[in-house]
Amino acid sequence: MERNIFVSYSQPDYGCAMELVARIEAEGIHCWIAPRDIAPSTDWAAEIIDAIANSRTMVLVFSASSNDSPQVRREVERAVHKQVNILPFRIENVLPSKSLEYFLSAQHWMDAFPPPREAHYARLCNYLKAQLAPSPAPAAHAPLEEATAHVAAPPPASQPLDTAEVLRIERLLAGYIGPIAKHLVKSAACHAVSLEELVRQVATELETETERHEFTRRWRTHEPVSRAEP
Image (tube, rainbow, N blue to C red; front, side):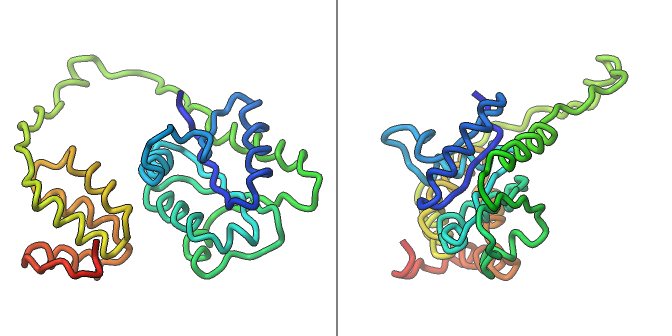
């Protein structure tokens, strides 16, 4: 089942988040929300990262509680990195903290106060339906011969990457972004054809060009992983 909407919230707003999901799904729009959609015995971080990457819009249940939540901030960061549209659904009259303002300053906000919230839910559903509406099909199609004339040849089969080097890359990256590095490196390693390409891919997870350059330099110069890094 395709889940187009990722719902981010902090635990004190769980009731509102589930109410919102029920209202959206009643309109035929499928949502992803934790912990409901996390399979048993799976890696929570990996499931959340994949769900964000596969969604088209993140609805952020925004309140004073979510404003101070490190987990919510990490989810918003991932959505921005993956270029997922974010819609803050503000259930309290609060402004984003500095850590969230950087990511949300250019976003469209939807106020959902004062209660009752039903009218606000209806407005949200109308907005989401408009956002998810399919684009019109092109008026004409190129002939099959033309459409396939410039298809690139399949890339050569990649060789297995050195396991010890992949682990070192993971540990270096974890020094910048924490345990989430394990999932990101594992996922990128499935597609990278060389260690150089793997490093280039995971370096994009870092926020600044300085960090990306330093990370790449440390890997190339075989700088040892410090004890502070997992």
